[in-house]
Image 1 (cartoon, rainbow, N blue to C red):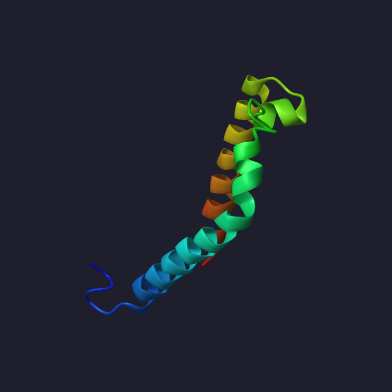
Image 2 (cartoon, rainbow, N blue to C red):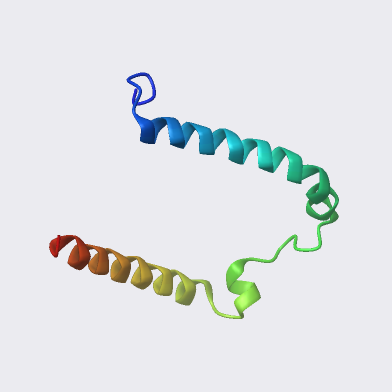
Length: 78
């Protein structure tokens, strides 16, 4: 809708989207062997950090809440 009305931010978003798709398609050629190797088949981020899943989920929820609080404070100053 925004791109159809000529909004610059929407056009920039679409350009970035297309550039990202193109970059991924080009990178996939180099990454395909690694992805198909199965070297990290069962690894999760929690496993890589060595913490239980619930600890990581709680930390990410706290980080999201803190980010929202900081942004609310910054926006309030404007």
